[in-house]
Every structure is written in structure tokens, then in C-alpha cells.
Image 1 (tube, one colour):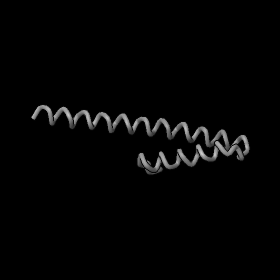
Image 2: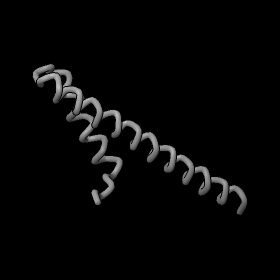
Image 3: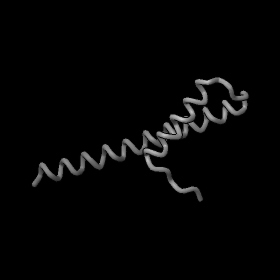
Image 4: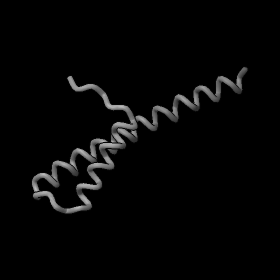
Length: 66
């Protein structure tokens, strides 16, 4: 089972992928695999950000209630 990457690790890998894709030096099959990996990382980061936002909202509402 693969370990879950931190948000920072996912963003770093996503930046690497973007750099590779911008150079346009990869074979088409590699480009497609990188693009697919990148999309997965975007979804993962989005999910993590939504979780962080929810946690912050919960903490903020607890503070207001006190």
C-alpha cells in the first residue's frame, strides 16, 4: 500500500510534472502518463485543501462559541 503524500509533497511532484510537460521533450505515451499522474495529484490536493478548510471552519466556529 502506498503511503499518502503530504500536501507539500504532492505540490512538489505536480510542479515537477508541469516542468516536464512544458519542456515537451517526452514521448507521447510518457506525456500522457505524466498528465494522468498530474490530474490525480490535482484531485488529491483539492481534496486535502477542502479538508483543511473544513477543519479551520470547525476550529473557528468552536472559538466563536466559547
